[in-house]
Image 1: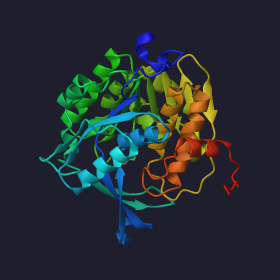
Image 2: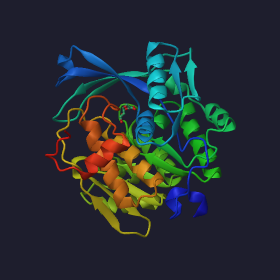
Image 3: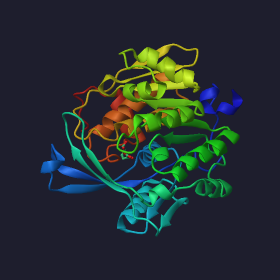
Length: 341
Ligand code: KDG
């Protein structure tokens, strides 16, 4: 178990320098509709920095951990905005390449408080999709993984391009060789690939990860098990793929987890009226990973993840609501009627 990182050992040691968390993928700009409802009626948009892995890195940094991000942005104003935002959040950008051969990926999305929100991507052929295994090797050679404790991956990056898929695989090799804990958020994006294309790729990544997180729908696709309303059997099917810990994000219903050979742990979410549901899953991952890096047990990590997810949906944009450590403690301690005066 020693080579399985934090999830495989009881006593998570201190970071020995460098970045605690390494992640990689496409950080993009998200143009979020100002008006609630259909994109068809939206006329104003606000610009935010987005991208699942970058959201997790920013979430970790807000909570006092250190995180670095490997990727590409275009040599354009959106790329500059991303660099400034990540740097300003304290995320390492030493391995965020400014790439003149493609533009920065962006997306438009509507804001709904009822039903799923539609996203329109403008990321095909983007700079972000040019991330390659050579980038990961270069970051590793420059020390990105030295002293790191955690590698976080999502199912979005392998869908972007063959080189992105290889980059994810290469990151696992670097992390595994150094004993990092590896987490995979399934994050199935059906506008990027079909379920049939995604299933074997994500199942393979899950097999090579320590912690797999996802929704019930995503877990059902990746495990090939019917989503029959039994989260416990989905957790077991995820564990059968190979990780030591499986986590189901249940949105307003909280989260559940099971470690291999352990009991099912279920924790409720915080009550919240969402103003922008996108980014909740990434915020959950940030909170969960942060708590595990702090040595928390799975129940506490689920609580922290749920609180971060609730905080994220209470603000517009993927990253605006990500709490710092003080806000997090207030959220975990407060009754719904509390006011800070
Ligand atoms: O989880 C939020 C992400 O989905 C969003 O920021 C954009 O990375 C993104 C994607 O590909 O959907």
